[in-house]
Image (cartoon, rainbow, N blue to C red):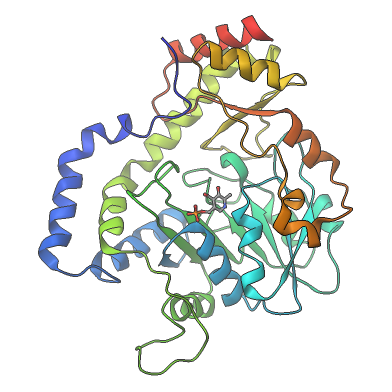
Length: 360
Ligand SMILES: Cc1ncc(COP(=O)(O)O)c(C=O)c1O
């Protein structure tokens, strides 16, 4: 039968009339940019995360640039970022004027650790980007204990739970992406910055709007990076369902574990005290290319997302040359995402398992 790598349409099936009504509401309002839907979604999403402020922006990449700038990062500064992540985590740093400094990850959790971050700190470090990769929850408190502000890149972790609360409320600030395939996905691009710090929230609001509060006086060189009313209205319909969808992702992971997948491939290890809403379910295997080919032949969706780590991508070479990041290289060489969604059934998990067993 085959199992798709992810399923974004089934969870939305029962919400179609509510989604249509939300879209109509925006059409009728004739407010399309930074209106009441965005303000309401900012409040609702921040409350969901357990933090005071939400600032809607155009996407998860610009959310990082704006959040770093609002945290005071600028020219001459260094920002520590893992190399095993989506390229945008690092790409968002140079537009602030700062330079990325790549650190390693633990290849079992795919996240940074206090030790890997410590190895990359210098007197010029002004922030660390802790990526909650694949929905796991990076150890933010332990990194903060090193004495550096942490920006959570929570693009993949909406709905996850950490030992100290939800992503979005763990660091100095956090950023989210609402790219359609994310745990909470818009029907286009969208992003959010969350923070408990009113000054950072205020600065982010100014930066997303050309560096201005009123489009008359311009305080900063800002950006045009706004969440639009249609996307906010669509996301508001979905947000109340995020906890159930997150649970569906946890149940899918449990189905894989209970079926014995861990005897065939290395399963992702949740961080201590974390309950990840796995965005991608990423296993590893020493002969991963053979596994990938066999799963593809069996029509089991699978994908290697980050085979070349960010520090070895061409535009990053100036900052990544000569670096040795063994955890990153191992993860890059051996990882493979297999099917994961809020509606993955135990029968589908069994089908994936059978295909892995036949290949491994
Ligand atoms: C870890 C991570 N950071 C940042 C981003 C950037 O988000 P966007 O695609 O909304 O710009 C993404 C997603 O695409 C991501 O997965």
